[in-house]
Every structure is written in structure tokens, then in C-alpha cells.
Length: 119
Image (cartoon, rainbow, N blue to C red; front, side, top):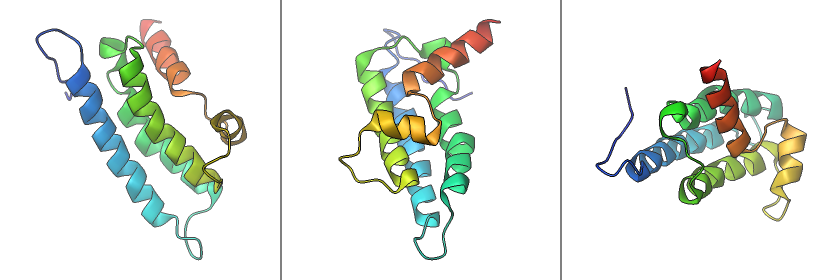
């Protein structure tokens, strides 16, 4: 089902595979967001929430521990996507973009996914 398990149950390989897939999907959405004839901000946000975010949160109840290496790897992808969706400069604070785009931090999304799974 797409969960990569290693012998020590660190899920490092799984986080790396997820980051690669999510990064490829995010790059694909950037191609569709041509400045002249591309998607608008609302469409990009919808595409992110429908295509990129599920890749990162899939099977998270099984492997998510909040390990900093996993968080950092996946957060980079989300931050890049937020900056691109908003058309913001790289120096724009990510927290402001999360509020502006109504997308919570990735750690919060993972915890929500785990909480929904438990209920």
C-alpha cells in the first residue's frame, strides 16, 4: 500500500520516498501555473490540497512520530508550494502564508489526520 518499513522502524526511507513523490507533484503544479494563462491562486490551493497534501499524509497514522528529520523534509515541500501558490517572495514568512492560504502547518495536518483516524 505504499508504506516502506525498515528493520529499525525509523521510517526514514518512507519519509524520503514520500518527499520525492510530493516534490514531483508540486513541481508539476508549478508547470501548470503559468503567469499568463495558468491557474489562479484558488485553483493552485485546491490542487495542492487534492494532490500534494494527500501524498504527504497518506499512512501517517502508521509512521508519523514527529521526528525532526521527517518534519523538515516534508515542510520544505509545503513551504515551497505555499510561496509559489501565493506568488510571494522567498523572504515572506511562511507562517503568514499559512494563514493567508488557509493551510495549517504540516505537523498540525499530520496530527489531525492521526486524530481523525483514531476516532
